[in-house]
Length: 170
Image (cartoon, rainbow, N blue to C red):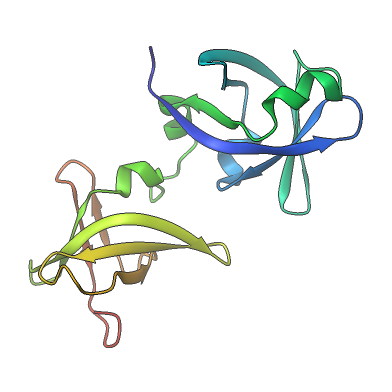
């Protein structure tokens, strides 16, 4: 079985034709959906995406196999998954999947270990790296905006990022 990743969640329905109101984090992935997976009673079900429109901060997704509210309701609250390799195809050169960043070691530009990325949060449309200080386990997480100016190097093969130290951040 292919590795799958979550790309959104069915929050509600929109209209009476079974259109799903979907919360998402990456617009490029959502707008290119073709085939998705959802879990129902422990089984992975496959759905074909007929179309995707955007309304306010949500995606409105119409699945070919779902044609009414009653058919959609069992999936309300369910995550939508796609094959990880499909998500990777839609990424640009300096874009990464969140799950690929979690667990990477963060170093400053003197090769000093700062800590490990334990989460990636989004605030006002910007990604924030949450780094657990490995030298002081009781210290609060270090929050670093995930911007090229502050994180000039991301090396997934070496499982590391380099953080450019700026006064007040580290």
